[in-house]
Length: 195
Ligand SMILES: Nc1nc2c(ncn2[C@@H]2O[C@H](COP(=O)(O)OP(=O)(O)OP(=O)(O)O)[C@@H](O)[C@H]2O)c(=O)[nH]1
Ligand SMILES: [Mg+2]
Image: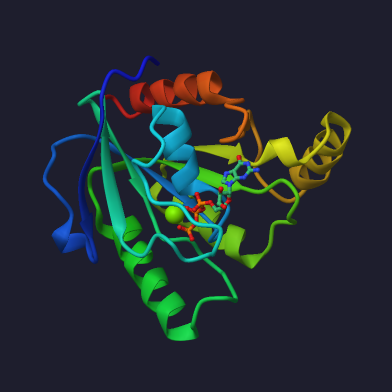
C-alpha cells in the first residue's frame, strides 16, 4: 500500500461526535504507551501526524486519520496504565467501549501488543470486543527493535498460547520494520469488509 495522502480529520470525545467521512475505519487498540500513535506516524511516514509521548496517556480522545482518502485509521486512548488516574482511565474505557459497540463504520481493528509483555485481562477484553462485533483484525507486535531475533521468537512462541495469533505483523516505529506487511494486511482487511 503506497501512502499518497494522510490527513488528520478530527477528534471526538464520544461516538456521537465522530466525523461523517463515509470511509471504513480501522481502529488501533492496545495498552497505553504500547506505540499506537507512533505506528500511525511510522506507517504514514509523518513525524508528528499523531501525538506521541514517553508518558502513558498521551492520546485522550478518539482521533481520525484519513489514509489515501479511502479509509481511516482511528487512534484510541490506551488501556490499563497504572500511571493514569482511575477516573480518567475509566472514562477512556467507556469512550472506547462505546465506539466499539456503536460505530457502524468500524470495520476492523489492529490489536497493538508489546511482545515483551504477557497478555492479561486487558487483552482478553480487547479480543472480546472484536469477537462481539465480528470484526476483521490483525495483531501487531510493536517495539520489536527492543528484542533480539531469538528473544522475539521465544516471546512469540509463549504468547501464541494465550492470544489468537494467525499472521501477526512484526513492527517497529524506530526501524520501520513491518510497514509493508502492515499495508498488505490493511488492504486485505478492507477487502474482507467489502470496501
Ligand atoms: N523503541 C521503540 N519505541 C517505540 C516504538 N513505538 C513507540 N515507541 C515509544 O513508546 C512511547 C509511547 O508511544 P506512543 O505512540 O505515544 O504510545 P500510545 O500507544 O499511542 O500511547 P497512549 O496514547 O498513551 O495510549 C514513546 O516514547 C515512543 O517513542 C517502537 O517501535 N520502538
Ligand atoms: Mg497514543
